[in-house]
Length: 231
Image (cartoon, rainbow, N blue to C red):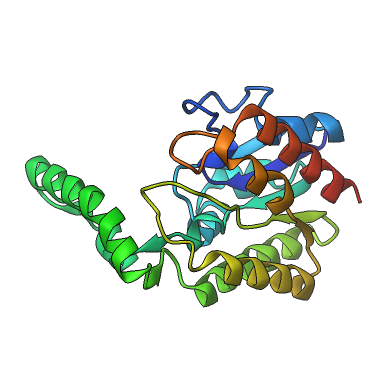
């Protein structure tokens, strides 16, 4: 039986209050899979970028060895976190878990969490979490790798989601990310699922963090994904 393979970030398993089990029928991947008549294989973690999606596709044997061969469609739900503003380079933030002592890790993590909102607002987000060129490059690698094994597999890209909230106070990179994603999807012949019209007007009803969605939004996004892949 064909499955819907979803490679995504925390939007795929986080509700309006907290993270929930990936099999929760209210989540957008499950809604899309239900509409398409496909069980869902979800591969996702919090904060994943396009680079993480590429690593998951090529380094996780369950993904390339089990999920991909039985996939009836692929939804790329990574790339949205790439646009988030950060006042420090991503490599510096991601190196914190490798600090040797737990006290040092906690101190560094707390300091970054406290400093990020005011710094991002003050300097208007000079860095993206991942540069646009890198996002495009990793997304392209994902599609090329999938098509080498499954040339006829339907593929869709979820558009970079809008957000609002105090932790990421600058939306400097959102409009350029939308334009770049749309152009990339056209260039790579990938279906483009535009979620801006359904998410943006409803951000006030979502999680207080301004990023994770209400169940209503999950439902609308799931319907849009099913429509995009079905077409």
